[in-house]
Length: 129
Length: 129
DNA sequence: GTTGAGCCTCAACCTGGGTTCAGGTCAAGG
DNA sequence: CCTTGACCTGAACCCAGGTTGAGGCTCAAC
Image (cartoon, rainbow over all chains, first blue to last red; front, side, top):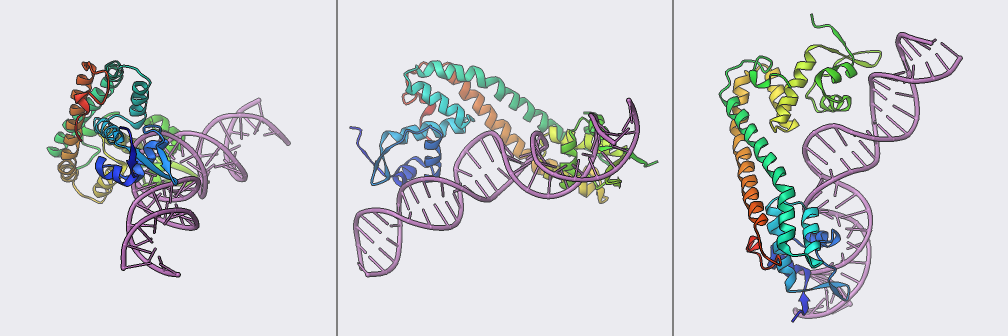
């Protein structure tokens, strides 16, 4: 079943990931070292699913280091739900802080759009540290 | 009134900004080239307010390039409110996109925390692109 | 007179997530 | 035979926002 038949270019096209990114993920340990034929990487079909997982996790805002840790735990036999729960526990406060900062920034910008000050020094938006 | 008496170290302490950051801002044009005495920078007191403006703007999420553009327009005589309005118009959609992305990420992480899947491949959280 | 703090410049380094480039290999097609 | 295209490696480059380090001045105190 697990025949290694895909070239890196084919994998990239099917997964919607650039060839250079695939090689980069391999160096970072997110993808296994594939079998090689005459020096060229030959992938089995499953790697496309793995790239899909990586892409989804990236879009969700995880760093490659976090994704790599998650994948290697699960590769090592750890239940996915357990690792996902740990990840959520660690990462949620961080994401919530991002949301709060961005909302504060939005409020500030809205106020900036309504400002009537002639100089920045006089503007209450810039008061204190 | 505008006596240039402060050393870079004093300015840094009073403004809560590192000395290396002050020199960096100067290179980037956010701070004027100060008067020099025996090769050392001598600042007038007003620079502390300017550093406060820069710090506030940074905390609000503006890049140094944006802050520099704002400051130079206003230094050049443009009314602050006008430049702030332009800035808000340009920057708000960006910040709102950040908020939406972060909220989507939070939702995903909350779902991840409740996941029961044994493998990532089986998990609906990772479905599709 | 020498020690030490604080200043100076310029250049290199850091993180993240890759991209791009130089120089080379290999197989197929005309 | 020669070209074209896909692949290979390793190193350099990109962005931001600084920090760190080397090597050197000067000023004041002791």
